[in-house]
Length: 304
Image (cartoon, rainbow, N blue to C red):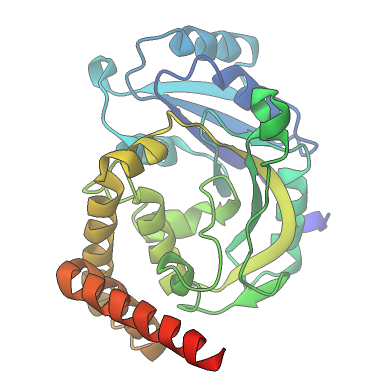
């Protein structure tokens, strides 16, 4: 590891809400890091199960490494507000995030800190993430673990705002919240998480603000496991249609933000307007897709 990064403090922010089934494993994955100069901030977003007790036991066991934070009167304030609470108390030069049902692999901090030491022009690094089905100990689920297409040549420094295309559904996976390591100064500069967007796409709003602002190093490693659960907020939102509404809100926010920031990138704007068109004109969009499908079928028929 680069000597400059060897003693830097990393703040790991873990928000949780009723996560007593998984939070111990998540915390243990932090304790197991080969890089030891870290602090863990456990942000309780109003839990009513045993996860509050579990987290406080770890604070008592590791008082110099782990801190517990909550909102006034143990309120539930949402993901963005909870992460911002952690950011405001972070002491580290770098910040990373870990949800209470996911885990870091032991080399996560060591590897990503070394990269940032080697590439000082990068203030953020991220890699790929394992989509983790096998935690269920089911033979069928074991075969479903996968790592998505990164969509970027690995070990590349990407200039802004190129990575925005990932958020717009073009060319690769959206980075998971647990996959990156970022300078705290940058997080503070962009204003952290947008508290007007709390539940869904709050991570993509955060990433968008970074992707517009600074070069980001995309590495080839995979240092996290993203637990796949049918009862997760994201999976449930797809079933209820909430995800569709939330994405429209995100896209509208992004349009206003890019305009405010003066982003001129033609490709990004084309992707964004194409995405927005399908939401603003849903009937016309469906008819267009049907027509395109029909034309494709006719071409295939004629070529036979």
